[in-house]
Each structure stands twice: as C-alpha cells, then as structure tokens.
Image (cartoon, rainbow, N blue to C red; front, side):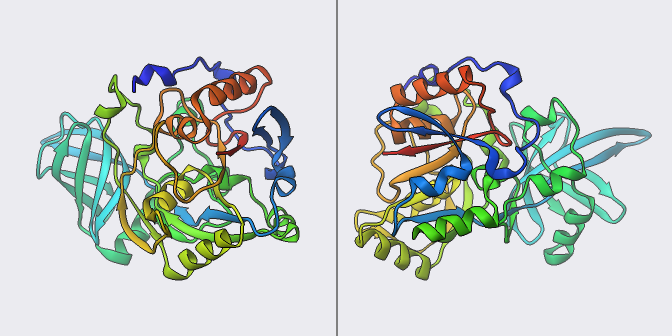
Length: 343
C-alpha cells in the first residue's frame, strides 16, 4: 500500500510533553459505530466479565549513552541509543554522528565503560562493550539517560521526573528502550476497578526497541523493513488466554506492543508459547488471530503503528477518529491520550 495513505497533519501543540496527572485522567476516545469521548478511568465500563487485559511488562532502561571518540588530540561527542541486546556484551545502537565512526574505533561513555564499533549499517552500529552481563547492565543503569522519544526530546530535556513517568506499573523485564505507552495510563486503582467488573489481567513481554520511532522512508509498505524486537509469552499465559476466549471473553491488548507479540505467537488454533525475535509488520489486509479489542495511544503520521491501528479498525474509521481527536484537543504520542478500538 502507498505510505502516503497514512499521512495526516498534526499541530505541534497536540504533542504531549508530560503525562496527565493522575494517569487515568487522560482522555479516551471510544471508536465504534460512533465516536465517544471518555476518560481512561471509564475503561472498566467498556469491559465485560471474562475479558482479559493483556499488558506488556517490559521495563525501560536508560538506553541513551553519551560518550566521546578520540583521534590524536581531537575529541568528538558521540550519542548512542541502544535498541537491541545481542548477547552479554553486544548491543545494536543508533548512533549520531555515525558516518565518521570507523570499525574497531573505541567510544568512551564513562570511566571504565567503553565500547568498540564492530559493525556499521546506515546509522546503526553494533557495539561491543568492555563489560559483560550484569556488570554491563549495572553500568548502563548508572550512566545512561532515559531515552525519551525524539518528538519530546526535541522540545525539552530529559529530567528526573521522566524516570518515573516513562515507566508503567507493570514494568518488570529489563531491556526495553521505549515504553509500552498505553500501559502508562494504568494505576493500581484502575486495575482493581477492571477486576471488579470481572476482567482479568495477563502479562506478556515485548522489549520495545528504538526502531519503533523510525520513520517509514519507503513509498510503499512492501519496501519497509521492520526492526526485530524480543518477546515472550509463557505456556501458562497462553493457556489462560485461550481458555478465556473459549469461554467467550475478549482479548483486550493494552498497547500495540502487546498486540504485536500476541499476533506473533498466534495461529488459527490460538495463542502459543513464544520466546524469540519478532519483526511482525501489520498493515490493512492483515487477518487478526488473537486480539479482539485494543487500547492504544495516538500515533505518528506515516508510522507503522498508525498503519497497525488502521488494519485493526479500518483506514476510514481511524482517519475520522484522528481528525476528531485533533479537533477536540486530544494529546498525542507517548505521554498523550488514548483510544479504545474494537475489530
């Protein structure tokens, strides 16, 4: 499909720079036969007994590293955003500036923390660190910065508040370099209200990579290559999801990341245990196998995530929903408001 089919104009003042407080006070656009304005706190009223909210328990690491490379007397500043762990001491990273880096060149990030450039691929590099395993994990936690999305980082600096705000209440599995942002709206009170309705909560993992923010540069969706991300659904979770659906409950994905790992793990007979990389790219025409409803934030124009929601609810329906959201003053992107979609 043509990528320009997924374009729209978004005023800059619609980009949220901070989350709503309290989190469940964010607005929620219910997209169905008609559009209905609500708030995230109203989510339990949209659920039915037996429904399952599926959340992503990925935990964001401070994956943005600032360092220097030295050639003779000359120092150059290097900014690296880690986006995928390869093994105990290797990470793939987006680096600026990347063109001038050479293979085997050393980048120093802090005293006792450095890496060599192992590979280069159009702005992405493979970094081999001098530390390994837990020692490297601890060093990244100590010297790294929270990797705010570029549309926020371009307008304000990261600060201590982001360490709390850019993390969900479900965060457990270390390794994500971007938050599963639909989950940012949840609080213990909201979860308790959902359970009182008769809904349950299940956790899956997708370690979100910085590739989620990369623009689609191709003119046709067939020519876009997705970055792989690691995910997992254990056998017990898969069995409970299938049992809930067999009883008539709906699988409600909280966020596109939960949806992507569910669909990666599903076949015609249900959700299967899964552990590994996925580069699933969902565009209109995709046949959904696992997910019945989706709660998600508002996404970037021409992005793979806007393509995904158009596949889920229909291009015309989502264009109407986004036009309504823009006109009604909804807040967009990672710290913004949300919508509730049904297939």
